[in-house]
Image 1 (tube, helix red, strand yellow):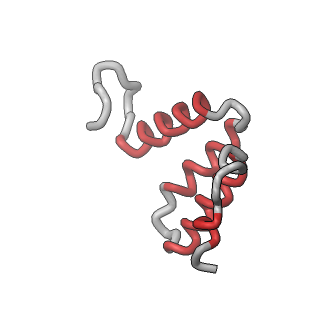
Image 2: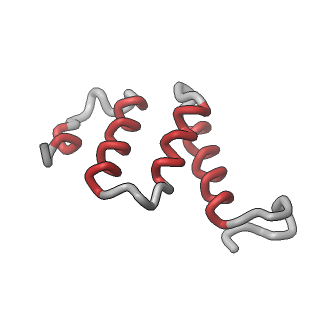
Length: 81
């Protein structure tokens, strides 16, 4: 496992641990985001049915929500359109 089983709740799995860990990292790093925004993004990242263009759109939408890159060159986000 990716986590310490002695410190994890019963029934903890690698995917659930990763979802929680990534969510906590994002919430700590970007306090302007709500837990529901982060949850939607993380759930989308783990959506195995998503094709590459859909994943890129999902990621781009999240980056736009961050509003952290607005002073940087963001033309790469629209490169394939």
